[in-house]
Amino acid sequence: MIKLTFLKSVSFLFVLSVILTSCQQKQSNEQEDNKKPEGNAISVSYNESADPSPIDESLWADIPQGLHGSFGTPDERYPKHLPIVTPKNMKWNATGWKGERIHTQVVLWTKEDEHTLTYEIGGFKDQNGATISANQTQLRFVKYVLTDEFSDGCGKRNKEDYAVSLVADVLDIATIINMENNSVRPVWVSIDIPENTISGTYLNEIKINSSKGDQVVFNIELTVQDQVLPQPSEWSYHLDLWQNPYAVARVHNVKAWSDEHWGYLEPMLKMLASAGQKCVTTSIIHHPWDGQTVDPFDEMIKWTKKTDGSWEYDYSVFDRWVEFAEKCGITQQINCYSMVPWHMRFRYFNEATNSFEELETKTGTEEFNNHWRPFLQNFWMHLKEKNWQDKTVIAMDERPMEAMKSVIKLIKETSPDLKIALAGEFHEEIQDDIFDLCVASKEIVPKEDIMQRNKKGNFTTYYTCCVEAYPNNFTFSPPAESAWQGWYAASKGFDGYLRWAYNSWVKEPLLDSRFRTWPAGDTYMVYPGARSSIRFERIREGIQDYEKIRILKEKLSADKLEELNNVLATFKLEALSNQPAGEMVNKGKDVINKISEELN
Image (cartoon, rainbow, N blue to C red):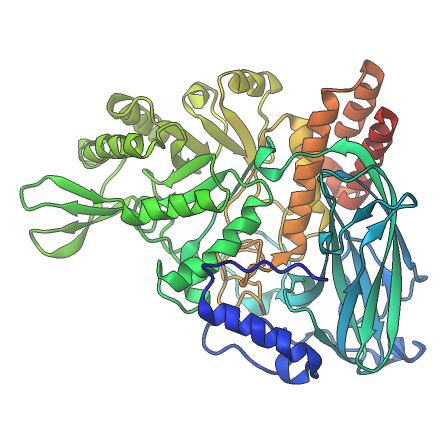
């Protein structure tokens, strides 16, 4: 049956809500779905937003009575108000490596109120008796959120100025759901193939049951190839999705860094680590990005100016956050934001005035250097005590080159072994000083430069933000664009991908993904309660493909390597203007599957 992970440190309220939901599976789900979260707390079940698109009952007139279903595609967001009119497909032929997660969608629809839906999942079996446990298959009902459109991309937004629609994105954690009349409900199907699975062909079935007595049965034929994908912790892909712990505290209505807060953070970070995340996001100053999100980043290091003019630094929150991320599986890199914030103001507590004060200054000035020099020296000593000196970086994003030059100079003079990260434009003259360099998707970094950087142990990645209409991860973006990003990294020789917001949630992230400044979904990839999304699962898929490409390149003969390189060469930004990302990704997967089978 469905996999649910319960963590010892999760808050009592969250555990209680899950237990209550489990008990209510024997009852009608109508009462459960009608419960609304109190304040900002998030219950296991919730009511999604109403669909702004009117239902055209004439489109549903010819749909027979009862519950209907079909396998769909993970490349499509199925509208809630439009019936499925394509021929039904009740069988999914799937292919995967050992250690890989594969997925698709089941689509359900009905013209009448079907009350509650539940599901049954069996285990896989092959003709020789080999099995894959039922708990390796996970079904999640897909829920809908409000979204808008790209339009001009970045810039202030008034909701009434943009088209609004309801889109499928949330992968819910509730195991039962109400089915409304004249509606569609997708179900996300994930299969985690164990690394020790015997290669071969396996059969299984999924049953969707309605409380009205209807049942829809879906068949799966899974081919497990004799290739192994390592654990996410061993993936080479340098994934950096920025975490916002303060948003978790606000949405779940708990005090920051309380036991309840850590309980909500744990499944969020573990879900991120399961996608191969390498970096923990830390804020070493107050509001490094000013107030650009609903939940600004507070300082994780408290700066105190003593009455004698010396400085004291309290690392307690910083240390606990980093240690917690390590426990959750995010262990490779500590990103510290930022010596060059957007507002160039630096808050500290002044003992002489018994109040918080701000220093407003500019990079390159003696005032700036005098403020940062004692911190850098003290910070480096602290990092060595924690044995973090080799994986900590001072990180900046989208900062001018002259500002970067002065900061690089100061770091070299003060703590020469401290690493530096930059997400921004590519500048040849400073690239040797940047350990972790991330450029915008449109930036051209010569492959020779990337190779030279790799030889020095440096990373070169790319990012997308509100600038790019495609490929992107907005709630209205075609889902396959998220997987396409992994292929693009492989094509260009990049080491990975960065996106600035894993969970900088809007006011009501489960209901409305729109934001005051950028296209909907730009500020977060996943949802409260450690709910994944179609976007996040597809990003993870693209990372798996990247790793498979890397592994195959080490095994292939010259002719097979050419076949793989030829399909990689098609992953160009300009190609997305006239070819769906799904077509390109599926063609690439066909090549990988063909080559993998031939290697068996």
